[in-house]
Each structure stands twice: as C-alpha cells, then as structure tokens.
Image (tube, rainbow, N blue to C red; front, side, top):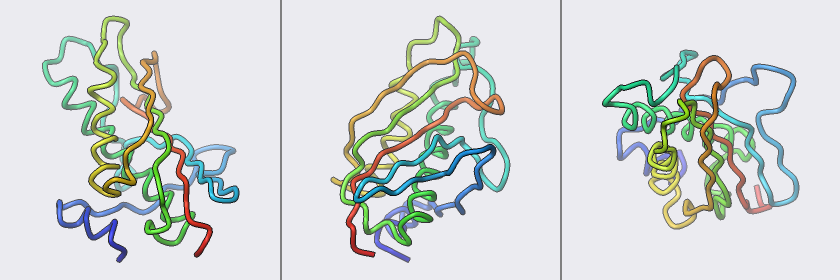
Length: 158
C-alpha cells in the first residue's frame, strides 16, 4: 500500500478497484508525464451511488451530490492507480472536471464538486490542489448525479 492509500485508509476510505469502461473508450491515457482520466461515475461494488437530478426540492441535495462526487473522485484515483501502478507517481492534480445532473434552478454545483476536491486534497495533500470546473447538465450516463474526470502531472519513473 502506498502513502496515498494509507492517508485514505486513516480516514476509513478504501480505494475501490478500477472500473472497466462502459463503452468504446479507454479509462485512462498516459502521454509522457500527463495522465488523462476519463469521466468516472459514483460507482461502488458495481452499483451506482446517487442518481437522478439535484434541485428537485430535496433538502439533502448538496450532501447527496457531495457524497456522489466523493465516490466518483475515488474512482478517478482507482484509474490513476491502474495506469501508474501506484499513486506516489502523481506530482500534481492539474484539473478536475465535474458534471452535476440537476434542474435549471440548481446553482450549487461548486458545493457538490467540493466532495471530489476534498478527496484529492485528503489523498494527495498539496499535490491534490487543482484547477476545476463544475458544470450543471440535464442528464448523465446511467442517470448518475455526478461524473468526474481528471488530468494529472505524473513522474515518468515507474
């Protein structure tokens, strides 16, 4: 277990296994020292955690969205581990992209994406500080609440 996974485990979080792609794409692409991670849904043990639209009069919308974003970010890290062999090779999380399924009236996309940002900061420390986008969309694959993709700068040493 590397130090990144150990930091997560101290918080009671176990990194999931990397999910196989659901269609005709690759889950990650490593080019030089740049690692691209395809959009990840909030899946755990093959089940989608959080579906529907935020902003449908639920008092727990932001909490539900943040939890979904956290799980999607963990799946991002799982893909990074699959690509790199260990997460210690990550030098910096350059960017997180967050897509939030919501109504037209919902405006707390950034609050929802804080769930994913918090995972990166907790797991990677200073290297987890990143640029970010949080966008509201009408629908996501499988009806998921969120989808998160990422871009990392990594060490070229295995």
